[in-house]
Image (cartoon, rainbow, N blue to C red):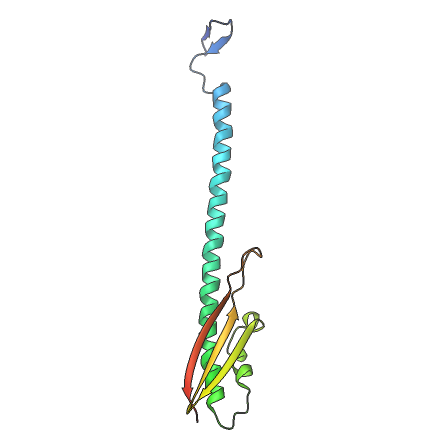
Length: 138
């Protein structure tokens, strides 16, 4: 089956019923650019979701570490340092960047755990997660 052609004003032939022409090729290029843009956006959203999960995990680990450290600091004859107890209660990859502060007030001890929130992309800084726990002295 032959396609019918039609002559335009400028002497060029145009294919009737043809799917591809100069316009079709341009639309394919536009579709490729849109595809790249959508993929980039989806990757960014996925990275943001993973980063949010890492931040939530760091906050949870700071709470666990502050409770363990406060428990160890509340004992009169503690065999373990409160900082060691706090780091032992955390994941190893978060324990390296953690800090502990102890405050004794009357018959209570308060321990604050600070855990640096790791970033997937090094250009961002998400600060640190802080959790505080108070326990009675033993």
